[in-house]
Length: 349
Image 1 (cartoon, rainbow, N blue to C red):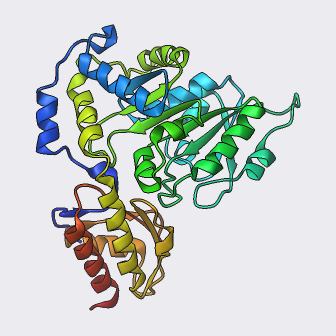
Image 2: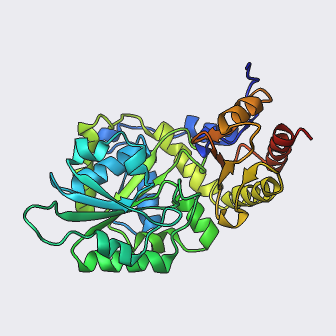
Image 3: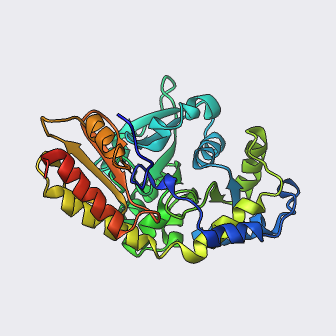
């Protein structure tokens, strides 16, 4: 089937593009050599994120995956075990990086909507035994992508963190969509950051930047992270040209995330009225919608192809599962058109 140019892209919030104002900030950024700590714009971004998260230091990196993998490599020794929810990004979307770089195993926990409870963490904790790997690290994902953009409640996170630290475990937060959680919950980034040893924020999702993530932790941790950044080829030169986008985003694109959440909830309620779809609008907390195609007329792939011919792109996870993600490049008119198109494709009306 021939596809039209994409007009409404709900595949992911990674599809955002820099606004003209963001690009202007990038062009006008003051630049220097990042590797020599001479790029003032990058240094300003790192200082801003460290303060935002309540950490001593922060480090600008090319991607969120690199943020995660550097953290895991520093926290773990070869043969150690990481505890994470079974849908976590570090398990499903990072090409086995924990095994390759940290030389660590991951023990998956079957949680609910990407989140797990203290008793589940306790059950996953390895007792001291010379034949077993050592439990070393707990990793949480805020928000949970495959959990449908679910937000870790602060009290639940406090309980997880308290148990972990009482048992000499470190806690890392994959904060890819942390600012979505902040806006949705009203809990500050610093309050979330206080519960974990290390945390990072993705710039290239809802914040609308073209590239990058910022990893934060103690001064000693970031000093070691710099070595890993060099080792993995993540060090840059005049990185301020992209760090400037991050500074712009923190000033202009955080509070507007509420629009994405409202659009996702609006679209979820529209989809709930369409025969052939299974969706629980109450599960939509932020900007991610998960649904199942139950129609006997078509599969998720067929629905996606039909919509693509109309210039609407959605994310297909399996033959029956679909993910839709709202972001700053799709407004209320766009999600309304997408909902109407999905209804027409499935029902013919």
